[in-house]
Amino acid sequence: MRIWDLHCHLSGVAGLTPEERLGNLLRYADRVGIERLCVYMGIKWAQDPTPDDLVKQNDDVLRAMDKFPDRVFGFVYLSAKHVERSLSELERCVTHGPMVGVKLWVAEKCNVPEIDPIIRRAAELKAVIFQHTWFKTNGNYAGESTPDDLVALAQRFPDVPIICGHTGGTWELGLRAIRDQKNLFADLAGSDPSYGITEMAVRELGVDRVIYGSDAGGRSFASQLAKVHGAQISEADKQKIFCDNLRGLMLPILKAKGIKA
Image (tube, rainbow, N blue to C red):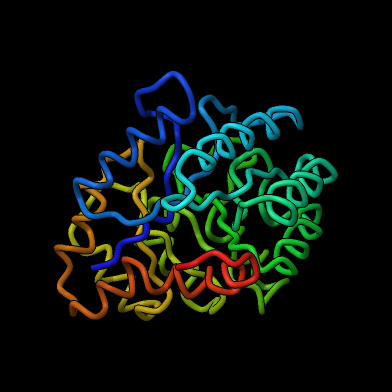
């Protein structure tokens, strides 16, 4: 099967430079048959980045991408707390650079109106939009979004596809939260490889809205691949989850940039 990994980081991987870390990540990916990685955020990042931090993290990923351009898709790391710099980074890294997606994390909740210019411009560029979400039993970080927050954002942009990162961690709740919002897609990455997550995602959302990711190097490729390889679904559905659904979201911007996929 073709496998594209939606959700990878340079943190948690051995190496002193971004290039070394991505090289090691790709070495592990080769062992388990992963063709391409989506990478975002650099070597050392903060939950509440300053504008200069955003630039540094994106520079790390750009350096790593330059070394392995045929294996990696980069997403630009942005924050609704710093809208002007985020819009500037979007232009630098996507409009005039090689990146093809947007990564939003925990500094500011995704339902705030300040995020709207970022989403609007990303949609114009056909960039894939990925928002981290979590339902935490002991309380989320300040500024950390839940799937319910993402639904509120998605309702303002019903024609813009958005990926629900981790599907809320507590995936039984997350899948139900996003089920009726048809422009939201489920990222399988990051939670423990519990039996039934992929089957429930397919049952609740339909297979076309489910995407494989690992959250490497915070999680192993093997444990996350197992969620799909071991699922009681058809081989054709596994291929959609492993590659085809993500590839379909990315094709408009890949074609616009002349990137073969």
